Structures are given as structure tokens and as C-alpha cells.
Length: 106
Image (tube, rainbow, N blue to C red; front, side):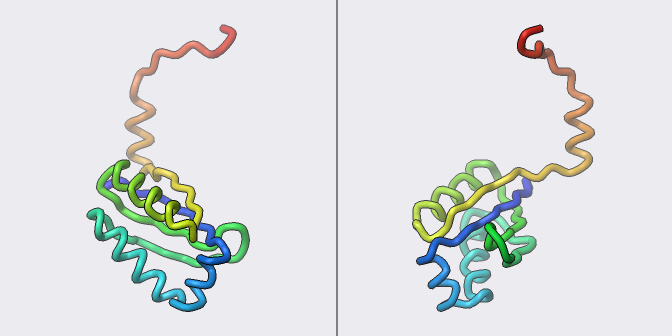
């Protein structure tokens, strides 16, 4: 199952919800959301700084990842950034593929 890194930043309204629900309450809500699209939360951390929460999740597809991002962002309480995570073996596979490419200006 593809693995994703989701970085979430709460708006002021979102932070009020965190204060109300607590960290474990938010984790439970996130786990339910991810499970609803057939995924699993591997890790969830809160952090100081620009990004409030880091999640590593397994999701069945890019479409499931997009559905999560769209739903969360549409709430207005959270802004997210998602990165697809690749294993070393997937990079090995990518490195073996032959790609035809011409750099700009060459």
C-alpha cells in the first residue's frame, strides 16, 4: 500500500478544536478518517513551528490520498501538504527504467 507523509497546519479555528478534543481526540478522529478510505495511520506527531502535525499513513491509492486532502482542506480548519513516500527498493526500480529525455536548450 502506498505510504504518504501529510503535514498539517491548523487555522485558529482548528487550534480551538485541538484544545477542546486534545491530542488523543484528534488522533482518534484522524484514524477514523484514514480507515474510512481503507488506510491506516502508521504514526502521528504534533510539533512546534509552522507545521502542527506530521502523519505517516498507508492509503490504498493516490485517489484516496486526494480524497483525504480535499476533505480536510475543505473543512477550513486545517491546511495540508502531502508527499508520496518511496522505499529504497522503489527508487532502485525507478533507477533501472530507461527514460528518453532532452534537457531544455540542448
